[in-house]
Length: 310
Image (cartoon, rainbow, N blue to C red; front, top):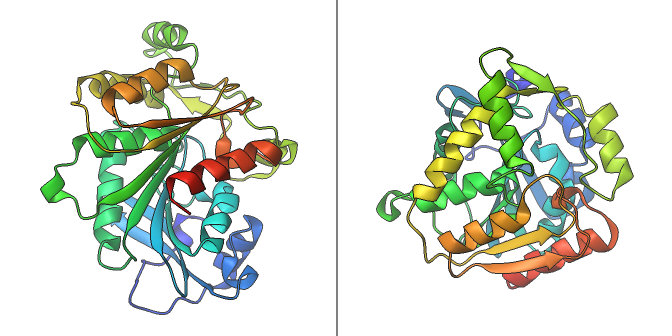
């Protein structure tokens, strides 16, 4: 399934998945409408110029709230089936989006000219769903998704916000990647000469099946890392440090065996911007917390439930 196979999202109409959409949901184990008796779903795109943004809306019969999920870099919502399933079992509706250049959304593969485009995507998604979802709302972001959530919360003018969020959960959020100085140096040296570098699939989860799926089976994975995205990330980091702090309460869930982001630096930077932030550490947890398994994923769910007061 590709972007062109999506229909415009219409929250006022009953949704029937065609065979292509059904196969997509089955492949990524997102077919909760068949797995659970009380769940319905809608899949389609919204316009967020110049992108078509793929949106998934999973709803239960008697929801207590709605959670918006923002995925990480080179991810897509198909990789978040375990967290989505957990939230649905807790009677929480879920809105999940593929960011530009990821999954079913349009845009150059795994890159962006400026992180402000991600901010605009969130703003547009919240505008579309503001009148349709069950309040209160919570917001969750993994890795780059966490960075985008942070960017939104620190920049949005309250009177312009279409939604307010009672809880915010950041899973292994990105501010600075591991090896940041080397990345800065390499980008300065090479940005004018190459457009991408080979991607190394890191061991960012204890779940070998998940890692093998990413490397060998997932058609949405890319083998190259665009240099443009690295430049956009470095520019965003400078902007992040210039933004004013916020009193918003949020939870940072972080594994101490994360080899993808500079988590010690990131935790300090985030708690400086959000003085009321709560930190939940997972012993030996790796970076892709949404893709962890066993005791590590149990700790992720425990942290989420604790913060969402479930």
